[in-house]
Image (tube, rainbow, N blue to C red):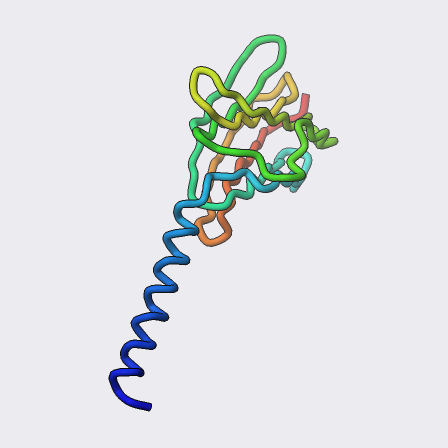
Length: 142
């Protein structure tokens, strides 16, 4: 093969891969799936599967129910993400998901927690898997 033809072919392939990478980066943020896992009577996890590296604003809300809230700005919901997931957990009773438009577009994920516990909440993002993990632990049962 002629050297110039080979170099041109390599450059075209490189441009194609750069184009694909840019297309993937330009994709809208999507919450693809929610997975609940009970690891023990004192620890439960929720995995939020995303299509990229998107970190939420996370905060607690108190009231009649104790809630942990994760707001993902400018995110969309993937097909199959249910609005309510009943976990059957001892700590995380259910996970609720909503798409909010005001004051700014966001996906809100709410973990409804059982009352009567002092919680330790850990958050971690697994970059390769594109998974945001929330671990809820308690030292005692009520």
